[in-house]
View 1 (tube, helix red, strand yellow):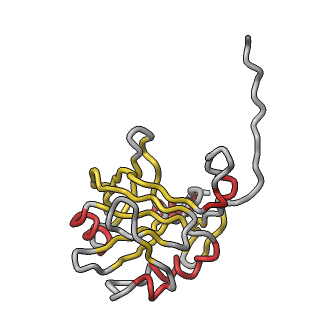
View 2: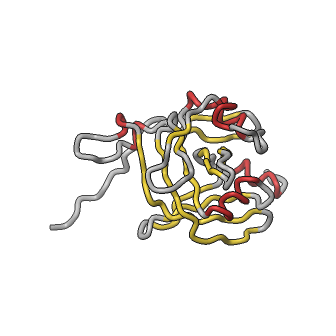
Length: 187
């Protein structure tokens, strides 16, 4: 069945939702949800976020050259959804019932309730149609203690990220772990 081109977004698999926190030059915290984001480089560690240039978050990132990515879990579903409707609130953390904690290497606060917080410095941007791809370099990562294994490996299977489906509909990205059969290596 052929669908309208604009519905293409709903034909692609959902991606994990993040909360981006920033702080402007007047020390006002800002939080916004994003579902269009990805890691784009391992060395250096670069992350890209697709963002509308008309948003307050875009303006703050361009002005301060930094942002923090928080990976929420399902307990933060309402805060994630409500964060999309905030526009220059005096204290967006308080409005959403979240706790701002100081970042390790930048000024943009971490979100205490998130499973993972990744602090980024702005590196570049690329205009992509009606959005701009903001590229940030990760400079610090903080993860919840239960996500670290004894050998300091991040236990990704313990992460429970949210994915956005449509409007106020989300899904979790947990599930069955599948293991592909691997051919034995020749010795």
